[in-house]
Length: 132
Image (cartoon, rainbow, N blue to C red):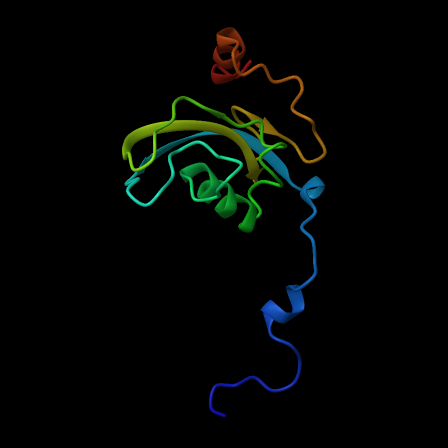
C-alpha cells in the first residue's frame, strides 16, 4: 500500500528485545519540580498495592524512556507527598538520570559511580559552581 515500507522490519521491530546499556552513558543529578492534578491518583508516594500513584507514573515514564534503570539505582529522594485525590503545585524530587553532559554540577561520566558526589555538602556545590 501507499506509504508502506517494503523489505526489512521497521524501527520498533528492530529494537524489540534489545536492552539499553546504561554503562555507556554518563548521568547527572537533577531536581524536578512537579505539579499535578491528583484526582485520579492514589496519592503521590508509591504503594505496594497499586501503581496508580504519581510516583508510579513518574517512574514508569523515566524507565520507559531509559532515563533511569530503576528507582533503586536512581538515588531518588522526594520532599513531600500527598494523599489520595490531592493535587500539588511545585513539589520537588531529586534523582540521577542518564545525561549527555560531560561536565557540570552533578555530572557523573560514563562508567563512574558518583560515589564522590556529596549532594548535601554546600561547600562541594559552591566549589564546583566557581569552577574549582
